[in-house]
Amino acid sequence: MPLGFPIVDPHIHLWDPGSTPREVTPAVKLFGWNDRLLRALGPRLFPKSALDFVGVIDHVMAPYLPGTYRRDTGGWAVRGYVYVQAGWKEKGALGPVGETRWAEAIGGRDMLGIVGDARLSDPELGHLLDAHQQASARFVGVRDMTAHDADAGVMDFDAHPGRMADPAWRRGFAELGRRGLTFDTWMYSEQLGELRALLRDHEGTKVVLDHLGTPIGVGGPYAGQGQSAADRARRFERWSADLEALAAHPNLCVKVSGLTMPILGWPFGERSSPPSVRQVVDALGPMVETALAHFGADRCLFASNFPMDKAVLPWTTLYEAFAQLTASHGEAVQRRLFHDNAVAFYGLDD
Image 1 (cartoon, rainbow, N blue to C red):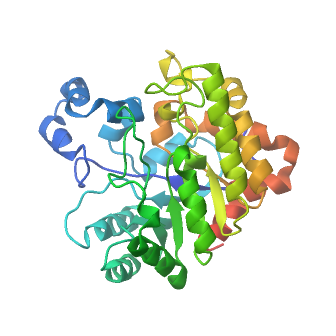
Image 2 (cartoon, helix red, strand yellow):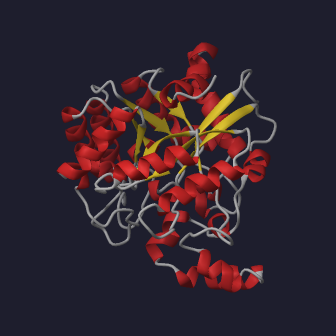
């Protein structure tokens, strides 16, 4: 059942691989005239780690636009969303600005904010941020993904691990705070110590940890990780302890999102039909309660990560599970988790 108040979804992606520069664009342009051929050849064009990460290629090869997202939300009262950078590949020093310009053009009234792409160690970061802000009044911050794992079976989003310790990167991070811009950070859980070290030294930038730090294999085997129940329990406990330590830094919030991505190891994607709400509640309940216990109701933002999680379950199933998991906390707390915290963190117009 939809909640009795509007929702802000603070983490979605949009794309049109046939007309915008993305990793899959060449394949879509070559074979997009034949959907059956594209689906047959698509898996052969990308590394196994990338295919395992997305689960199925359907949603990354096809356009995902505001109308698609609106249909996915069914009858839920979604007031709007925050667009988060999504693998734009335009060349040039100001290439990332093309994504912000594109999002501004297609977002419509539902798009409340844009989190753009920038490499914080870029010596021309100031010019890039100026250009982002000029491209859209809805530009609210940056995501510079640092997700990296030594296992070759895990998809890397950063070829240079440890960048958060780089002085040039940290200067860029501080510049975001000086401009009043936010920072979305995304990494795998084994890297959370790097985030803690950063926050110890820099308290002036508002940060949100995407997808609760993505503990690989916490729900089942993935790329050789999480193979046993004991290993999964160990991963969960370490992840929880790292979150608890991070919660000591008041400039950090967390997104309760991306928790059904294949990389967590849940068996959902192996089934012939999507998981039920009950199955999602049972699987995600300990993670959601851990986030709330450590960060409280004022520092958690519930988000969909669509269409990435669409490979596993419908949006409505995910949000019904979120609603059931938080029903005992009362409507006032739910309003903060599903709406108010996103508005406050990103400074969205209310």
